[in-house]
Every structure is written in structure tokens, then in C-alpha cells.
Length: 184
Image (cartoon, rainbow, N blue to C red):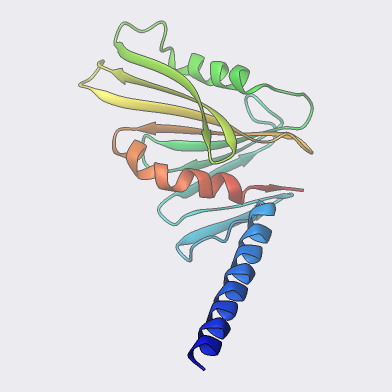
């Protein structure tokens, strides 16, 4: 009897594990990520995404400076996120990162110290991250991360422009935010 019960328990445990594993695999095959209740939802003109309540919507412009459309969010007074949607031409990640870095004039300013630039992944999204210290008025740490989110139907990039405390605070939200972006 004991052996029969153990066999039954082992079989049930195996089946439960199998069901959970299959459910997890199905969730990974789609890019959809459930957003926590503390996230706001944005949906306009074929674009949707979810972002933390502590961030605020800033603009949705067509055209934007660099691309066909730009959507901006404010994390704080000095930190922003920009979604860049290129509908009319193909763009490469390093080109977009270079263009955005040129706005900060990191190579021209004498007050810039400790500049680094790396290629990495945020989840499955390729990204370029640059960090530097600006000593113009005190010392401020900056990070610019540009990730390529989609290439179909349009090239979509997200630029996280962060300073000081926001660099650490935004890290937990980056991948979830990128995964939430939908373009129709």
C-alpha cells in the first residue's frame, strides 16, 4: 500500500511539474509580459506599453527629431525615456546611440570624466550603454542606454537617459518596460 501511494504521489508530482513547465514555455514564446498593478498603461495610434506609476507620460510626437515618431516619459526632473519609431528608414543600434550621445557632447566637454561604452543585452534586447561623470557643477553620474526593441514592422528603439539615483532605481523596470512595447 505504501509503495502504491508513493507511486501515485510521484506520478501526480511529475504531471504537475510537466503542466507548469509547459505553461512556462508557452509564456516565454510570446513577448507579452503581465504588468504589475502599479504600472500604468499607454495605448495610442498603434503603440502600447506599460510603465511604472512613478514615471509620467510626457509627449507623443510625429515626427520626432530623429525618427517618424517619438514617445517620451519622465522618470524624474533629469531622467527620461524616449521610444523612437522609424517607419521610413532602417536604423542601426550604434547609429542611434551615436546620435543621442552627440547631444550630450561627451567627447567635446572638458568636464566629462570616466566615459565608458559597452554593448550588452537587456533580457533578449541588444543594447548600447554609455556612462560618464560630469564635473561641470559638482559631480553627476549619467547613463545612456539605447536598446533595439523591434525591427518589424518598424525599427523601434528605447533610450533610457538616466542620472544619479535614477540609474539604480530604473534598472529593475528596464526589461519589463521593453517587453511590454507593442507596435501594430
